[in-house]
Structures are given as C-alpha cells and as structure tokens.
Length: 517
Image 1 (cartoon, helix red, strand yellow):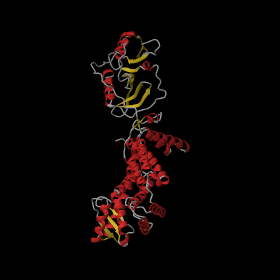
Image 2: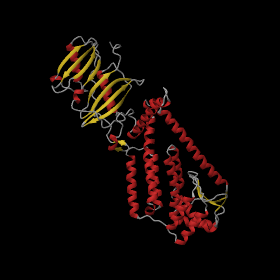
Image 3: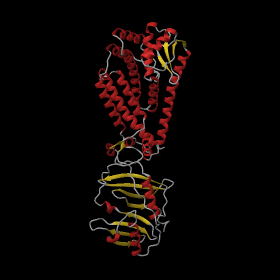
Image 4: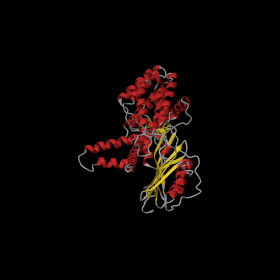
C-alpha cells in the first residue's frame, strides 16, 4: 500500500473531522437549551465516524480542486492540495536559508519526488502506537487498581435496588457492582468484563442515584465510546482539535447521563441528585482519557440538572437531518468523473516488423499501415502524404483535410517508430485549462495500450503504465500516459483519447535509436 493512500485518509479525516468538532463546539455553546445534552452527545458519534472511516464519495466540486501541476496521481484533491502547499512553503523557506543544501530544500525535493512519504508514514505509525500504548496502559493501570481495592459486592437489599433500577432503565443484562476503597466517585471499570465501582464511603441515601447514573452510562455503552475516543486520539495524535473533541465528548457523556437519570425525577429529587454530583468532588474518573472534571464543568452539570433542559422534537429532527447532511458532505472528497475505460481492446492480428526503409514509398506505406490500424482508425484514402529523409530518420506528413494540421510520423531508417503526433485530431480542442486529473488507470485502458505497443512498437517492453494527466475539454477526454520498464524508467510516452472515440493520438518510444539501428 502506498503511503499516499494513508495520507489521503488522514488529511481528509482530520480536516473534515476538525470542522465537525468545531461545529459541535458551537452547537454546545448556542443550542444546548434547544436540543438537550443527549442529542449533543449523540452527535459526537458522527465526528468519530468521520475521523475513523476511510471513505471517499464522489463530488463534482473536487473535479476542479486538484492543483493544476499535480505531481502525484495517487493523491486525491484534498491531499494533493496540502502536499502542493507544503512543497511551495518548503521552496520559499529554502530560498530564505543562506547555505546550499539546506534541510528545507532537501526535504522539499524528496517530497516532490515521493521519497519522503515513507518516512513520514513510519513516523506517524510510531507515534500513534506510542500514544495508543500509553492510553491503554493508563486504562489498564486504573482498572487493576480499582479491582485490587474492591471491598464487597452488593448485599440483598442493595441487589433488589439494582434489579429495580435495571427494570426502570430497561437494562436486560445486569452488571456486577462493587464497593471500592479509595475511590472518589463511581465509574464503570472495564470494557469486555465491566463492573460498576462505587466509593466505599458513599452515603446510603445516595446509592440509588449513584447506581442510576452508572446504569445510564452502561446502557449508553459509554465504556465502548470511551475506547473510541482513545482510538481517535491515537490515530490523530497530531491534531489538537481531536484531543479537545475527545475531552468535550466525555463531558457531554456525563451530562447526557444526568439528563437520563433526572428525566422522570421531581424537583426535590433533582436537587438531591445535584447534591450527589457536588459531593463527588471536582475530580471524577474518565475511563478513556484519564482526565479530570474541572469545576467549570461541574457547575455546568449542576445547572443543567436544576434547569432540566429538554430538547423539542422539531429541534431534534432538524438537527438530525442537518447532522446527516453535514456528515455526507464531509465524506464527499473524491472526484466525480468516473475512471476512464475502453469498451473493447482490438485483437492484435499482426505485428509491425522493423524493415529497413529505402525510399519514400516504403516510408509512406509504413505510415499508412500505422494510421489505418484499429488503434488509430484513420481513413488514409483522402490523405496526401509527403516523406523526406533527413540523414538519420524518415519524417512523414499526412494531410487529412486542408484546414487541419498535418499528422506527423518519424521512423528510423531501420523501420522503428520514433514518434507519432496525431494532434490534428484535436485541432479544435484546447487543454490549456485541464478540468481535472485522475489517479489510476483501469485494466481495460492498460490492456488497450499494451496491445497497441505489441502491435506497433514490438521492440519495446514495458512493465507498467501510469497516467500523468486525465484531461477533458468539452466532450473530448484525453489520457497523458507513461509506460515504465521494470526499473521504473520511462520507455514510452502515449496520449490516448478515450472519449468520444478511442484512439492513440501521440506516441514517442524512448528506446536507444542507435541500439536499434
């Protein structure tokens, strides 16, 4: 897998994921009274989905977004724009540095040639693994500490209370509950074998409300979402907005649970629940991030509990629709133009043989056979040909129509095709402003070009074919391709028109003319 494949995902995910997080930050500040905490907390799942899903949907806007001098067809438009901006900044920085061979110039040159991507990818993987290992070790250390400090499980009357609360919140699977020494506040310890941990010093009158809060965490699968927050931070360790979003989503998870617990409580019971929150202190355990709850967040929780904010159904419906549309747009990072294809590859019934050309008629005959092949498809009956020998090669000109530019071909004196320029077919087409470029070639196009080379340039062998540009002007679509040998060296330049008709319009083999006569 190419490093650019990973960079495509990372750059798109971190850019559009950051936009989603910032939108959620604004919604938290402006719309909490209209939407409620549970809706805002659910919206964080959309940000996590964008940060972790390597999906790219077609978008017509992206057809025009790719840089005009795109050097890496493996990069999608967003990644290619970022790559080009980094290269431009590196060149400007290298001009400011006074000495030759400065690091900025070397890095920029390697980045343009695609040589730095592998090392940047290895650096990202190494740091991501370190961050992930640190978060996992911190979580394991906390869980083991809680497990060692367990004192007792619930007793008979406490178990009856637990069963009653599970029925109230429609929880089918009853989770174990333990009282734990030296624990400041309740939490759920573990993801695969979880249990509720309650402080040993918890007052008995607070037991029902503390259990309700943790059961609401359990019903919302918050231990799992805490793990997702850790994965987002490990993958996008370089993005501070992701770390901020992870912390805010944890805060909203607490407020969403508060909202579930107090949804059916009377005013006096809500005040009692607020007292439970305050008595827990200003520090609470965050399972995924190992964070602490600030006094500001504590005041926000207490205020929300007392005010008992409930979002309207209309607001929730409109927010859900808007969130779905924003998420869909955030994935629309790919070009909409479909990959170029060829419906049928001509069967190669003959192979051009390099026969020495001794006169004008033989040179014109070679040109006619080439132009009349299925790969060009030119009716030469109305063409006027001229041929001349310049001392090293034959130059043939074919004039199809008076108003068109002539078609040019060059052959070596031993009959090897040196160049074919059929730009006359594109006489009224301008590619000065190419509308888009593409990333790869389909198997049908690759098979077509290989068949063309086998039939018309049999002396040349290529390993693979890459597209440098995929251009459109009106209804004409043209591929600018390079054929590479096994060592990655360019051995032939080919331009293939794929729409509205399929034909080769340019070919220049780069084999050694002297070695071939």
